[in-house]
Image (tube, rainbow, N blue to C red):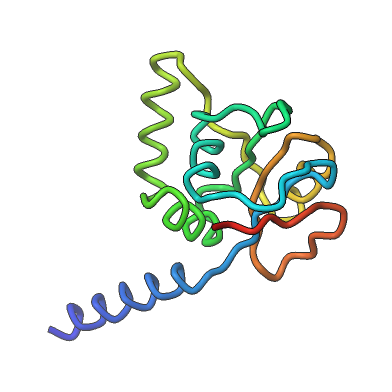
Length: 139
């Protein structure tokens, strides 16, 4: 009984931590976009939308699968778990229709990537220094 109670408390605490995690969506400073809908953002990260409104190729970049920021972003933007999105990419890769976004190990790596590529878009934890890139408003 004690083990079950501990498991329930641990699960609720872990879920609360993931949901409490906030993130910023960032793009290259040359990108003219100021805001984006969750649907359009999801479509870019799922590579259903491959360019920005100005015609620049969109290049999404993810954090690693163990990142709590990625878990929060994935749930909030896609409405699914990281596992569900990984399954989507396995199927897309197998069929040859698309490959998953590049992954970077840290927030700083995502900022560096986004600042180096004009069409890049990524997300980082809310506390990350985003000097040199632009933060989008997500609607």
